[in-house]
Figure 1 (cartoon, rainbow, N blue to C red):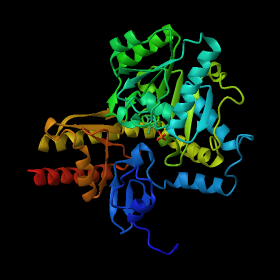
Figure 2: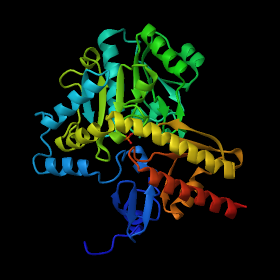
Figure 3: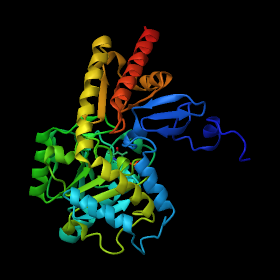
Figure 4: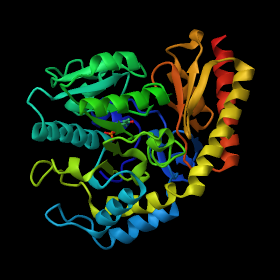
Amino acid sequence: MNSLPVTRDLFDAFMVPNYAPAAIMPVRGEGSRLWDQDGREFLDFAGGIAVTGLGHAHPKLVTALTEQAQKLWHVSNVLTNEPALKLARQLCELTFAERVFFANSGAEANEAALKLARKYSADHFAPDKREIIAFTPSFHGRTLFTVTVGGQPKYTEGFEPLPPGITHVPFNDLAAFTAAISDRTCAVILEPVLGESGVISATPEFLQGVRELCGRRQALLIFDEVQCGNGRSGQLYAYMAYGVIPDILTTAKGLGGGFPISAMLTTTSIAASLNVGTHGTTYGGNPLGCAVANAALAIFSDPDVLAGVRRKHELFMAGLSRINQRFNIFRDVRGMGLLLGCELIDAWRGRSRDFIKAALDEGLLILVAGPDVIRLAPSLIIPDDLIEAGLNRFEQAIARLLSTAA
Ligand SMILES: *Cc1c(COP(=O)(O)O)cnc(C)c1O
């Protein structure tokens, strides 16, 4: 059995059909390049959906993983371990946080944050203060709680009954938020930069206004930096670019550079509500994930690496604007750091997926952020010449798509 060839067909034969993966299957990666089963090379502007922030098989991450793999993989949370404590201390030293909880995915970190906010409210306030305010569009994960907080009907339909006590308000609309928040609000959750939902940055006035109103109403402010965190914005965490400090911050994706790990960061006084026995997860804070994240954090928190992200942002913006001068296909090119969005003109609305396919044919991996926006989330340390080469392939892909569509 094990010597039979492994082909893409096996996906349709044996996997639950909740994904529709491309026809090619990567088998190896190095930096910002991947190779498929046939040895064909692809440039990676997708980063495994904003996860492999240091590219594929980064030598320092490989060393951290393999060294830890020979020592200790798992001990459960009945015991603690050195990599987890080292990572927690480092995250606290580098951010507003004083306490850390580790989990394995973005949804789990958000689930922990939302549960903590409810529990904190239960510990300190009247029983009617349990409402959570979130924004549309947004994305917070696929557990029943987080998918309901995300508020996108296409992701909740059929999964009812949904958890109650969640209100939705349009993103970047401070007036609507002001009208919605009340003394019944226990927490507000938002992505400082919308990742899945179109690559839209919060306006500074919006974030400052939300922060101010949360303080006044004694509601906890949760920043979901699962996607925009870990250096992707050009700052270690995007809140630092705004100078607006949350009460709880969640992160995942880039934290382990491709190894599954997530974290919820908060203050000592808020953390106190997750006392012994109130919450947990088997693999959270396991030595392997934490060892890799320690190595990744040392790189993506380096001021030179972060300055590099901001400089590479300019390279991408210049290249994308050059492409747009030729084709007039984008109505907007935007983003922070190396999370970039190209919004298609009206004539191409709803067709962002066609560009993924066209780029794949040219040997380039890109992403969408909804039906109208092409998203790029390359490695934070992608070499400049590969940015140029990838943008050339992107340009070729667009040229071909436009000529076949004409
Ligand atoms: C990807 C993402 C999540 C969910 O993370 P998972 O690891 O898939 O559970 C949550 N929030 C944001 C902003 C994300 O981009």
